[in-house]
Image 1 (cartoon, rainbow, N blue to C red):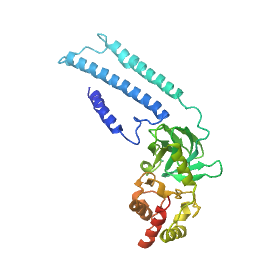
Image 2 (image 1 turned 90 degrees about the horizontal axis):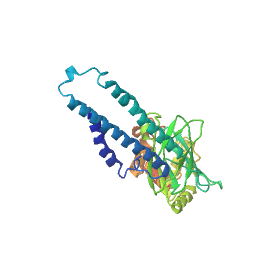
Image 3 (image 1 turned 120 degrees about the vertical axis):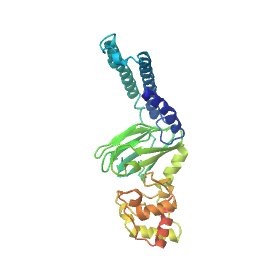
Image 4 (image 1 turned 135 degrees about the vertical axis):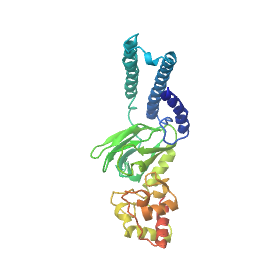
Length: 334
Ligand code: CUA
């Protein structure tokens, strides 16, 4: 009885928390997530049914035998064994059998045909603790970005996945199930968003102290908007004004350029996010901070205090005026 009561209380809570959430398995926005959500709802209602039946039986037994527990008959008398066979073996076997068949049917509905031939080819590499996304350009016009993956709405997109260090897991609950990123191995996940929107994703495999701060966003855009985004990402970094130009020199002559690539400015070391179009991204530090001037300044100066364990070192070497120049440069990278 207490169990079924608790489960019943949790249902409205789960439903309420799903409303308008950017990362809810209960609100699918793509065919794969819908298939998984169907199974989830089925198993949940089945579980509620079992909880109600068990709760009712416990209640009936308690009322029927009220005050007589001391002289209750042994379990193997008066049909007790039959109840054990039915309730302890037959009923669970039937319920779990139904779930098994439904799960096989769900697996059978994957994958969703082939990826669109004219869709983007995207490679994602997991790092502690950020996501490196590379868009392959058939015409040699590929580019890299980090923690924000754009896809065209209504197109089936294959994303290949691997890891630079430990095992991570790529999970965008509103679009698809999980797929692991494994060092030395290439996995694949197929995404399709039916509606435009920004879908939050999260690393779903424990990968070290900042595992919880290894988020990303999938931005699904109408095809023309998506193509405009690709065109802008292909461009080299823009630098306008004297302050930004001074910031660019500071970036080049300090440790920043050893790790971070900025096309047209620095090749980087391939171990940190490509910043060519940093200002076009909504978030910093893998979904940890909104991309605002204050957060960017805090991140540049003392990243480890925000995300302990990050490979980004503290950079307390800049004077106030130098920091303003560097920020002007970074904020101009649209
Ligand atoms: Cu990467 Cu958890």
